[in-house]
Length: 252
Length: 89
Image (cartoon, rainbow over all chains, first blue to last red; front, side):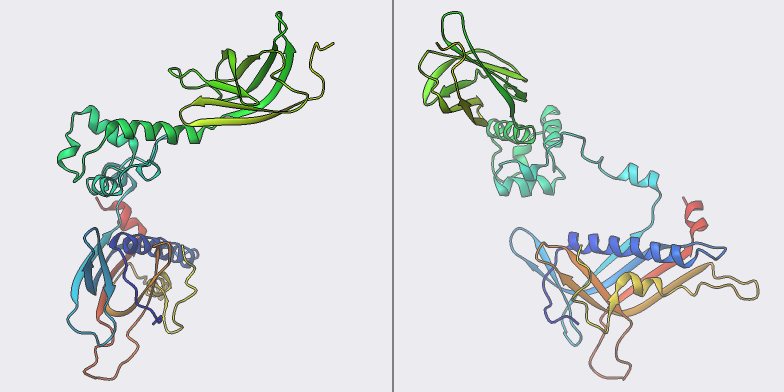
C-alpha cells in the first residue's frame, strides 16, 4: 500500500474506474487478437469499505485499510452500454463557443449549486432562463444575471482577443495625421464606441470596425520616434500599440 | 492521468489485475465464453494533487487465518464474448 491514504471524491473515483475498464478492454482486445473470440467487460461492481466525511460542500471518502473496523460500505456498479444508450442518456458534448461556468466570474457557491442541478455551461444556464425556470429557488445565493452577462462577454472577448497587424500613417486634407490600423477582432461591440489616445492625448476616431480602425490626430500630437497609442475597444479590451515614426508623412 | 508511479510493488494497476482474469486459449475445441469472478481485493486509491485518482489492486496478500481482515473490499467482474454484449439490449 502507498504510505498515504488520502480522501477522494466519488466523481474522481468513478472517472478512474472508467479509465481502468477502458484499459482492461484494450488489454483483452490485444490478448484475443489470435483467438476466435474477443472479450470485453460487461459488468463490474465493487463493494468498498470507506469512511465518509462531509465538509459542508462535498462528501469525500477515505478507503478503509486492512484491520480498520467500523467502515461503511459503498457499492458501485458499472455496466457496459451501447453507443446508442450513451447518446440517449448523456448530455451533449459542449458546442463550439460554449463557455463552461468554471470560466465565468460567478460566486463559487452559486457555481456549486448550479453544478448540483446539472448546469455546467453558460448555454445551459441561458436555456433554463429562456424556459423561465426560477433558478433562484434552487441556489442559495441570488444570481445577478446582469453581472453574469458581463462576465460571459468578458470570457467570450478573451477567446477572440483583438490583434493589430499593421499601422499606416498619412496626412489628411486639413493637415491632420491619419493613423490607419488593420487587424482582427478590433471593434466588435456594436453598442460601444472605441476611445483612443496618442501619447496621452485623446484623439478622434474616423472609422472603426472588426478589421480596421482609423484615428485622426492634430498636428503635433504624433512625434518623431516612438508614439504610444492606447485604444479602449470595448469594456473588456484595451490595446496598447507603439508606432515608430521616422518621418512624418507630408511633413516639409 | 497519473502513470501509476507510486503504486506499491505488491499491487498492480487495476486494469492489469482485471485483464489477467481471462484464460484466453482454445483447448480441444472448447473456448471460454464468459468469466464471472467475485473476489476480495486489496485496493489502493492514489490521489494526485490535481484531484485525479489512480487505482491499484491485487488479490488478497495474506492467506493465513487471522483476526486481521486484510482485504475488506470486494469486486465482481463479468467478462463476456464481445458478441454477447453487442447482441444484448
